[in-house]
Image (cartoon, rainbow, N blue to C red):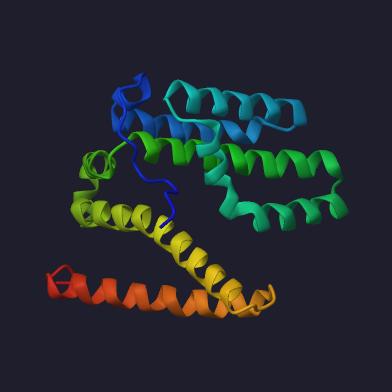
Length: 200
């Protein structure tokens, strides 16, 4: 199973920062990312993200693992912008995506899922007046966080099975089994939640 985005225990300053503050900082980073419009600015942002990983006691290899699943998306996005808007815009767009993914992964790597869910539930408390259940929202967030490494793990299993059978790297041959396995996992998860009365 891939360790993408899974909590890693530690005692760094970033591990000690409250989950709510980390989520707030992530939101601010997302808003501030629209101001990055030059390759050098993106390079600085990537360097800052790398230093945050190191200061949290995480190797840069851990940061690289967070970006690996986005390789094909990054290549397609870069190719599109190379043709339409030029290399500089391609670097900016792909770089901003990489920065945001790295920061989001850093939050989940240094924060327990229960703490993240608790922060979301507390923040969503005022939405009760709109008949929004904060606990149910927190459950959705927890499932979303958990499903990311699960899907990545399924993708690795499909890829390993193809290699073992000597199959060529066909996008369709990869996507169809991954989709089927993902749907089966989602179905099993839904049945488990229904058995516990979560859908009531």
